[in-house]
Image 1: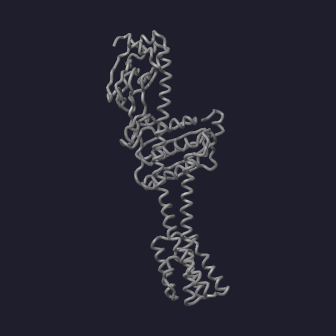
Image 2 (image 1 turned 90 degrees about the vertical axis):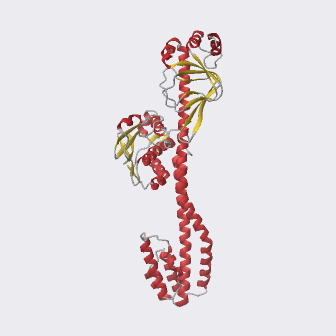
Image 3 (image 1 turned 180 degrees about the vertical axis):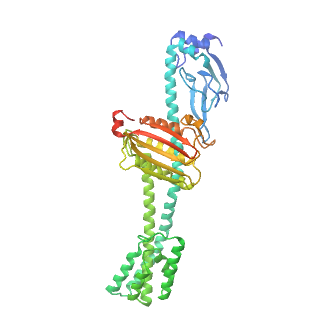
Amino acid sequence: MSTLSILERISAHRTLSTVPAQEREWLAANGVLRRLEAGDILSSKGRDVDGLHVVLSGRIAIFVDRGAGVRREMEWHAGDVTGVMPYSRIGAPPGDVRALEPAEILTVFRDQMPDLIRECPEMTGVLVHRMVDRARVFTSQQLQDEKLISLGKLSAGLAHELNNPASAIARSSSSLQANFAQSDAASRALGSLGLSAEQMAMLEHVRDGCVPGASRAVLSPLQQEERENAFVAWIKKNGADTDCAESLAETDVSIAMLDQLAASLHGPALNTALRWLASGCALRRVTAEIHEASSRIYDLVAAIKGFSQMDRAQVPEPVDIEQGLANTVVVLRSKAKGKSIGLTMDIEKNLPRVNGYGGELNQVWSNLIDNALDAVSERGQVQLTARSENGSVVVRVIDDGPGVPADLQERIFEPFFTTKEVGKGTGLGLDIVRRLVQRHNGVIELDSKPGRSEFRVVLPAAANSAKGGAA
């Protein structure tokens, strides 16, 4: 193809048609035309991009693996430009740039970029604007990818946390109908006894102890078994049915209370009274289990709602760091339990608020705590602290893992850099954490050595950040 025909195509190019003619001529004279077939690779992951690519025809796209399989992340069509831009610091791309169909690319190689900047100032301006737009799109996609990855982790943790109380509700509600039937039958039998007011008063006194373990210390399985055996022995001694022993032993009812009851009731009347007490105690225990489990679900949903800040407007406002950390710990508690990791939180009382976006700060805490949980071994320790220091709020995430090697600490916040095994990290988490912290006029630092790593986030307190137009 002649230089003139390339120039004609550049003059019709959507991005470059407005630049001066002499600059288009320079590009036509210095660019190298490359033809790609579908599937051909223009730039490879791990190898530096070789130059500025002007797409004259066809389509190319970058394919990136963030840990969940390779997917197409961005496309360029005829009329677009990609690759190295003036003043760009781009090195190796995060994935392969491949032709989706036969394409023609005009390339200005990297070593010619100083000449392009000198000879084509208006084109340079156009290309810099394109570079900024591209960076904005990539940043948005990276943030969205990291949010989706976080969402997957949170969903798994939440499902695990919700499973236990949901199972408890299902189990208890299934036995509720049978407990009601037993309670009704026992109540009718008790009513037929015609007890005196004094006897009913004594019976109701014992029944008041049917709150399941309200004040009694938590017993070990062996201690609980010994308590049940004591109730069985007492019931046998007084000639009553031992089926009610287990229900009574799980409450605050004592042998002394039963002795008082036996002084007022004897024989079949005592047996009927014990049946009534046991059925009532079982019914209260089941309803208490349902209440406790449903409250746990409510607390978890409230924590997720607080963590995601899904009901908050996207405007900066004073953010309660303590509540955000607490919600994040609730969300990640199941992961800590799975590795028997001690996850502790030490928050200064009356901690100042910071001005910003609660959901974004919660994502910071989530990434840092999740990384710490990944770093430590089973039965390790992760500690969260938050203090007010010199007009700022300082949050520290400390773990006793192996630490980050000294030669890697300077790269830890770089995009796509990760110390995790292949497939277990995208290399985006800490880069996004850094950006979110900077968005809140804060700084993040790492101090690490074997046995102790500390990520330290410093955010201006609300009064100070308002002066600087924080967030």
